[in-house]
Image 1 (cartoon, rainbow, N blue to C red):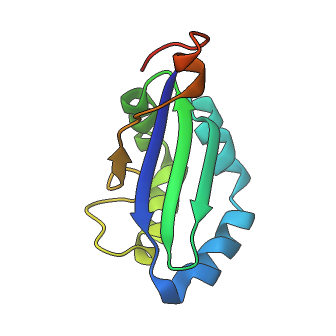
Image 2: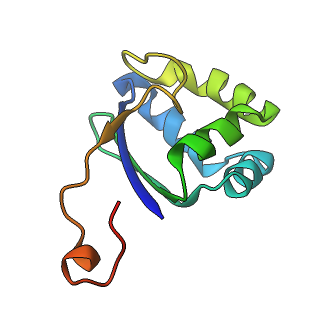
Length: 114
């Protein structure tokens, strides 16, 4: 299982609306994420708009490609793009992926390496 952490920047004046929209994610979007391999998916938002995402997936490339084939993802990404600063493409493709440098279970010999 690949552990992926990523970063985006939400526009400060859009934080409240961004948060509200994620409290009401469309059921078909939730189903599509699950069905295309996104699991243990979380978003964390700092008061200044720094957004950190975390997801576990067998393959990030396959999960992104699976979502790209869904109509619901195209609609969601189009609506979400306006919330971000300096976005290169759609939010689900334009994020900055962070490099994992430590994982407790790997150090203890209990997990798989990425």
